[in-house]
Amino acid sequence: MPFGPTSIQSVKSPNQRALLAQWQALAAGRLFPELGEFAAPERDLKQLILWGVEDDGQLRRFRMQKLGERALEAIAADFSGKTMDEVVPEPLRTFGLEAANACADFGWAAYSIITIIDTNAHQVDCERLLLPFGRDGAVEHIIAALQLISFQGTVERCGIAHEFKAKSGVTFRGLIAASGNGTTTPLKLPRTPRPPQATHAATANPASPAAEAPEQKAEAGRPVTEKRRAPRRVVHKTGRISARGVREICTVRDISATGAALDVVDATKVPDLFTLVLEMESAARSCAVIWRKARQLGVEFR
Image (spheres, rainbow, N blue to C red):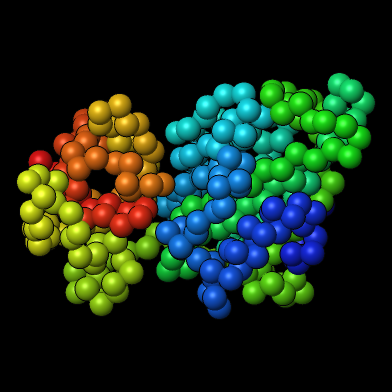
């Protein structure tokens, strides 16, 4: 069953239709919106999983950055920091990765229904909606919304992922464009690494984290003008933030010998001073925040 174009009317869950409609409205003529523009209703946050997309043009991985508590109940394990191929049960792994790759390949929302018969002989549908976010024609994050539905009785959420490991089947799959038109054919996005941003190019693009004016100083509350002392390169690598009991997964957007720009889930929860460890590295960098937005940080290495 291939991923073909469909429309918002195919989505059964009212909550997921509302999230999809919000995503389409935010795109506003673009292929997809940026993650920082998205604010899910409180009732939906518990159902959502945030995946970071790591793509160097040849190898693509999806790494879990945030897991809602209702999704955590169903999965029965906290897989924050793990990749999708480590998290998804073996029987569903191929399909799970196919859906995520289709979402990243085309920049369209991916909707699917996975069905099981539970231990009470009730049919349970897991409705899975993947929403892509990014910029410059590249999908950088995917938000997954999961909804368990049964019309034959109450769904026991805790540990139900074990049921899907052995008895599940995919009964629907489709791609939905931000335009809301489900009749067009999705076109694949190019999978090539984006070149490092030049300093003058960042200045011309105020939406770029590298061009952001500093808003907070890590020490003494004094505003400081960021002075780029070394060229930065785009990396899109996963990092781990640690400070005073805070443990967060982030995406390192670009980095130099003196600092970096980070994408985070909630910048208000990250203190002004912390340590940063990049994936596949053991050395920790001491960081001071020199500017911040809702989901972005600019840091200086100390």
